[in-house]
Length: 102
Image (cartoon, rainbow, N blue to C red; front, side, top):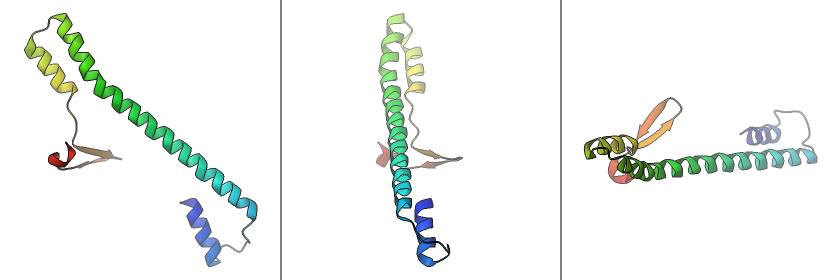
């Protein structure tokens, strides 16, 4: 956003300075750094999601090994395996149709 805004301001003449060629290096550095950070964050989110999905299977094995009643096992696994249908963005939730989500 900062790069595109700066380019537009330079092109429109709002900034009374000539664009220097070495500024492009800074722009590409920030673009590359942003993409690396974005990839790292998405990787962490995928790892956490994958771990949480495997957790229910492992939890069912552990609870079954303890000899807990099936009603208790079903209650615990129902609470752990529940998935919200939608996404949480900032301070609100956006819900989507269940038939499309599953």
